[in-house]
Image (tube, each protein chain N blue to C red):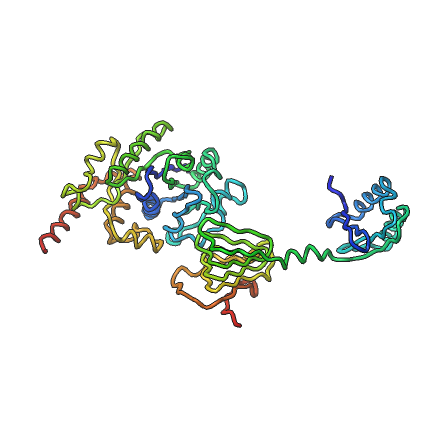
Length: 264
Length: 201
């Protein structure tokens, strides 16, 4: 088996890379794919916390690279899905502890066993970013409807192309339809026009994400959450399904919104 | 080449310690070599051949005596079996004092005991050869007895570690329901399991 490696990146910090990684990974695992998440944010690891797996860490990616343990020893199995794994970052080291060649080597070994290897990139465009995109077959760029985030996303697309990663896809996170409608928030159409790349999904702003992140339970597990549904749809699109982009989601969103407005 | 023995100078004289793990022939050969090279090395002093941790037959003993007899001008030759107390003492009794809160990403690692006056936050790591005592909230990862000492223990004013390891045993709190326990607690190994007790005065 040879899986695909997908890097999730953004340039800007705080747009939801780690949340997206955790949720896309979980949603893919729900589709019975074998998935391994890699936290490439060495020194500022978070993915383990968001996945609720922090207390299981014994070895990390730096231990693997330095030969302190075997790769299988460092992999943490998810508590909900046995086909979902996490390779955690080291917290007491920094980005220079790993280089792109070592990263590629680890990913190549994981790809043998997995359908998808998903790499959570750190913010920025320095060594951590370069490590994260080494060995990636596909890239997903997470952005929010803010000018600064879109600007950074655009810069990242350019850097990815320079590294031979063409046709990245974008996930627009934290959209608030009511604000877009009022013209207070960037429209998805405008964003896609600037970035000129494929739209993989739109995730609505959802207070539930904060709760689920703090609890270590990805929102994709929540059947009733709209954000969770958005991530589950993204996972299906990644697997090649032709899900109508947002049109359906938007319709339900708008109709719900109209209901609320109508009631008040 | 690593020498087969080392010298330790004391007020009484010179102690020859043999490196552990060597077989008798290696010890004998290296000693013969030393006698040959430095016959008058011990002029005027007492020497103590430290046989601690080494079982010798009568023949081996007399072989050794043959060899050391060739040292010239030695005051007196003793055979002894002293454990190298100084080193062991260091390992188990020394303590490092950390007078600050350890934050995420900070890592303290010593072969001694470690006392932290402050908290150990999630994401911080404390690794000690001996005991770990935290005068504060312990929320990070701790590893006591990291060299394999199963008697090692972890004590904290509030014991809520992300993960707690003693010697080669790893434990983590249950995923659900971790209340705020403010009572001082002690974790140690009992029958190959880590147990946590309230600390009694």
